[in-house]
Image (cartoon, rainbow, N blue to C red; front, side):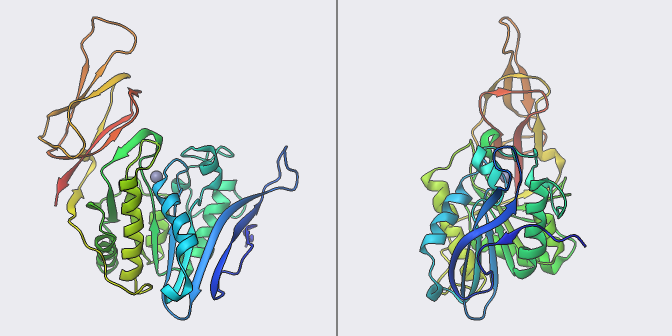
Amino acid sequence: MIANPISPTIPLDAQGVHHGFLKLPYSRDDSAWGAVMIPITVIANGDGPTALLTGANHGDEYEGPIALQELAVSLTPDQIAGRVIILPMMNLPAFAAGARCSPIDGGNMNRSFPGRPDGTVTQKISHFIATQLVPQADIVLDFHSGGRTLDFLPFAAAHILDDKAQEAACMAAMQAFNAPFSVRMLEIDNVGMFDTEVENQGKVFVTTELGGAGTASPRTVGIARRGIRNLLIHAGIMAGQIDLQETVQLDMPDELCFVISQVAGLIEYLVEMGDTVAEDQPIARVWPANRTGAEPTVCCARRAGILTARHVPGLVKMGDFVGLVATRA
Ligand SMILES: [Zn+2]
């Protein structure tokens, strides 16, 4: 078996607080013997479960990196029993470029699992995380948001799984995270996702979509911060009371939740995110971007529900995602 070339600069199993890097040798024009340095913090105290907390799986999603950076400088060993492994920018090359995918190899990390030890940079990072970090974890939280081309109602999500005991454990962890919306999600295209890899290893997994539009807000970062604390308490790693606020339960039962644009142009939304829509109700219309005197093309909801995500910014291409209509559970 080929060994993964990544080496941590800190011990992953030592007590106390260690800040360092996952060092991946990457020889290139501007640095012959250079390396990609992925920041990692490990905080450990005695016996207890291990949580793996990850951000910037996609490099243009910011609530995770912000909340995890704050956690890495503020969490102390005496606050925990067990271990917290923090990777605020797991796809560092993409994060550094402010892009969804890695500029080095075009890799979408969330389609690159379980990765390859002899693959591209993105595949090597994915492989290290899948084979060296996930097996050590009892619970995994992976932060996402909409990035530069999507915006979401802030939700935590867990997947519908074949193993119903595992599904129940994931749903309980999602409820503990306690975002304003909680989504029971059927993943239509799950091959290569970090989610799928973690779930296949039998772990408890929670993901989020906390906002988007290529930035983060005080509200969405606050949801991330409170969710981390709640999840660590739920996992038995932190002491304290889970801070439970009202959450709306949503389902994404099938592909009819998704609305795609069949034309390119200037998009005008007709409803706000969070609005209730009926089946066949127009949710947006797309005006021509290159002529006057032509009617817009209407994009309709394919099922009744709540507009849970939308496209940003103002122009759409043919085939772009327009809306996610989730149903009240
Ligand atoms: Zn993402």
